[in-house]
Length: 231
Image (cartoon, rainbow, N blue to C red; front, top):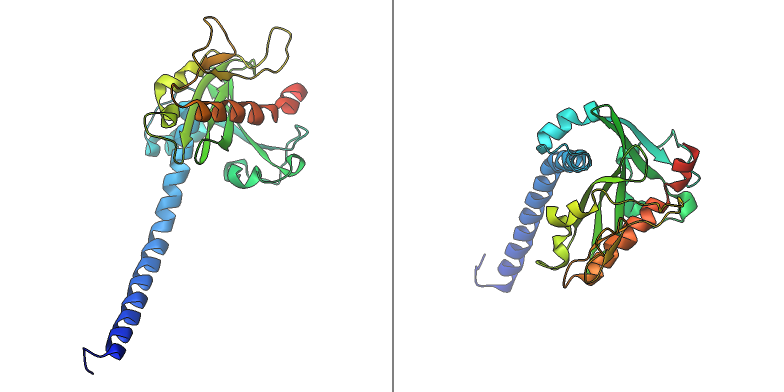
């Protein structure tokens, strides 16, 4: 066949497309189990970090069951749905459903004789989705740890939500006021007032992302109030 002909060029292009597509499909299929395992381990790592257990992904996988004693899937009324695996709940999909149809995962952990409640979070940032975990003390009011992350916030600004200096601000904050009313914790532009146990400093230049975290925390936590009231 004439290598300078149009037919040769066309056939060559088709063959290359098929070969490359097959190679990519094989690679994706081969790596999928490894990727899934990495996601599983990272999830465990983030959950444990909110109760002060900072370990590698592999260590998190090994130690997770030693700290997390219950994994519950809650209904909107606070009851437990025994038919749903809490760990497999994907909040990106759940949050698109009506509230009464959603499943709300809750991890009950124990450390040094104390009980903690770890709540997964999911919301919207400036550009893309944001997510994280918040751990409450046994009083179901005081935050003992927070972990946030994002899919594409602005570097140096909103992307700072996954830095310890921002996450650590939530430690010690309370989600109920003195009258036991749910008030959540808000990121305040310009800085929270000294001694405000319901506020943290918003990220300078990252107001929209900070507001997104505030909305996410309030909206997600509110869904667990029926369970806390019943228990």
